[in-house]
Amino acid sequence: MFKRVTLFRFFNFPVKADASWIFLSILIFWTLVNNFFPARYPGHNLETYQVMGAVTLAGVIISIIAHEVAHAIIAEYYHMPIESITLFIFGGVAEMKGEPSHPKGEFLMAVAGPAMSALLGIFFWASENVYMMKYGAADAGSQVLEYLGDLNMLIAAFNMVPAFPLDGGRALRAAIWHYKNNLVLATRIASGLGANFAYLLIGYAVYKICWHNNMVQGMWYGLFGYFVYGAGLYAVRQTESRSLLSSEKVTRFMHDHIVSVSPDLTITDLVDGYFYKHYQKLFPVVDRDRLVGIITLQAVLLIDRHKWGFLHVASVMQPLTETNTIDPDTSAAGALELMQKQGRDSLLVTRDGKFMGVIALRDLFAYLSITMKVDRDRPVMTSRGADGR
Image (cartoon, rainbow, N blue to C red; front, side, top):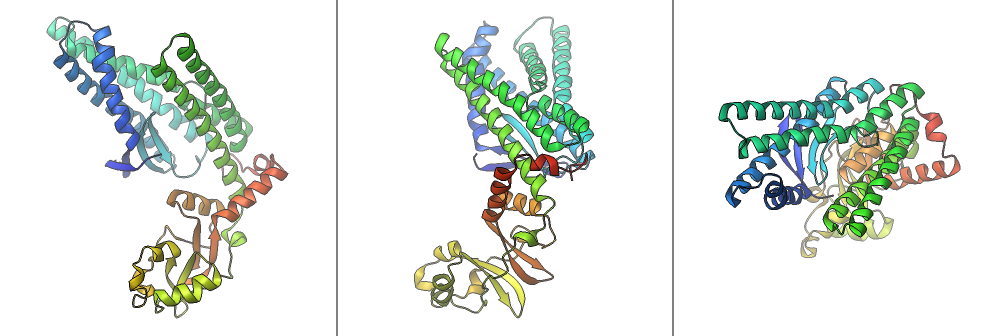
């Protein structure tokens, strides 16, 4: 939802923090210092509670990152590349590139996170016992360790609820996928159970607000229920889309009647002779039959109009990269994923430096919309075998 900042890299994938995590961190710290710790462990002064809150927050962050890293390590082992780990308002998520490769890999990846949380819980509980044996009594240090042990056990148990997209729901999807040999059908079933769990969370949120007058808890349960429902629905749509598009090549959706421009054109000539005339929002830049860049209307509008007469396309065009070009033999599913990831509505199709055409996001969406309206079961029927490809 918000801008992400890379904190560090681990096993060659970035660990990022969504801006919403800042809000969650402040809320956790404030709640621990002002409500939870004073109620559960009375007798300390405010400064002690603040130190306990800061140390506990650090432990929570480490615990969540460890949970997601466990997912990522297993995913990488089973050749399911991880894009990044992101901390956000509901905890953390390991973002995978594309769909899981096979049921066994997804199942082990799903249970790895809760297993790590359970191990951390045992570690913190054992550390609490060692601490108390050494110092002879419970104090702020042992209380923080006890809380972190309880929290990690709670994370492990809650994540194993069989409701997609929770880890238990992913494990359930893997089991159904293995049994039915169909990833789309498995995703629909697991997400349906996740939707039922979301309804329970939202219902409980209403109960907390209306009967207990607890607005804060009710709001969080409601928001999390909404997140579970939305994430499950999105997963179904993504899986259905990949299933339908994985067997289609980019060439099926490519438009090859696209006007190109020379890098020697001035911006004034580009606007008057091309944008006004051909109604394209982007133009491939071709020099001696070779594609050398791309110029968009958005980029032109950022240029001072007084400079249009002497600036040339070559000086303001975007260079060709793997984020704005694609090979014609790539699957349409790969094109859709790239456009969604990069926030683009089109890609240039090129091979060996030659411009071949443009593939547009709207055409892929139109194909998916029409296909799903005509035959909703087609993604299930066309889903590939147990390898999901």
